[in-house]
Length: 543
Image 1 (cartoon, rainbow, N blue to C red):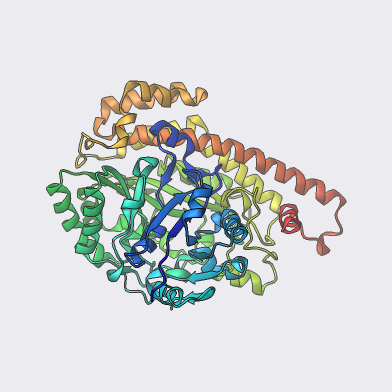
Image 2 (cartoon, helix red, strand yellow):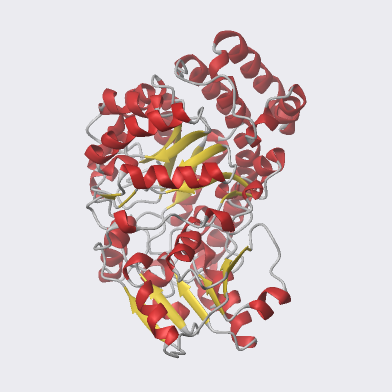
């Protein structure tokens, strides 16, 4: 006799004060969190259809005792920055005698941290979840189920259970076309988790997912969460014309963003296809302005072209760019702040994600630092109050003094997010963003209509008082010179409200960290015998 199961899926909290939380932007849009837990709703679709599933997202709603009372078992897990809350969820389940199953990237990379869970599902769920189901139905009370890496056929991945979502809680909904990336960046764990051969879904399969979302009544922003959408150019070029035709048939219900490597800018045909398929924004990992640093981190694709010219070409196809930058690489021989700020300005990227380098054990960087004896004990453990990766990076002995790296980081934060700098970049973007292919009207039911009223624009422009005049000038200039780009400029302005607040708080905490390091250096043992990372010591003591 099979063993039935009420499945309670709990999505763990991320740190609330993070660049990625978009909290101020969510408030403007009436949302509670940026995006939905795509991984969990995909896992839900892999379970037997007779198993009832309930989803609670701890970032958007309260977990209640009635949820636990309903459940036969709990599924949870996620990324590194969700680790503290995942461990809390495990403790809650153990206290109630409720079996708990943990999966996701962090348990795959650091299973020892989750030893208290009854079950661990490591790797891509499509490759192993059926074994868990079989074990559960035969009465198993614990177990480890590990998929063989890089072998999952994503064309057999099911349509995610979008019906489990409260879609009005989110700024956008995520879908996934492919997994893996052909590049070999030393610091990146994507290639360790999903491989360097990009595995893509079939076009019909991807359109079926969009059909499911469409039939539920969702309209608006959809993000392709691929770590590199163009990792398999042949597949994506075959898919985009079909996506364009689907959009035309359905009166353009969705507008898309994604992440791609900078070599996207080399392919005019591909950028044209993306623009015609209603892609309006791309996140690009730029990392560093220093060629030697890019070579050492094995991100050579960023050295083979002019980064500003590449970003500008993407703009010319009607897609704005968000950029990722990292401070703290070994090859930074001197201050990196000025060159990084200059690159941000030259690219006219309005919103930048700037973080401190964090080494993860299951990466080439982590293995190298471990071999060199430079990776801190407990490098993969996240303390509860430690913030996100932007604050807690440098979990290893650096080659140049930590205080210098942190001063660079603080300078980049303060300069890149100053109101004048962001307004200037938005102004330049207005002149480069060709939105000829863009629909002027958003579809009915799209939550982004909330940003279209002058009242919303006024709230956005005045939310950062010192930026008011500069942002109002950007708005009026865009309305006059490039009206088709106006709603994207307003959206980016709304993002700035959040980013400016986080950057200010982060700069203050980095100042405290510098002061702690300097105070410790005065009373510490000789330099050749001491480890200069005060925060690292504090975190290890907490653990």
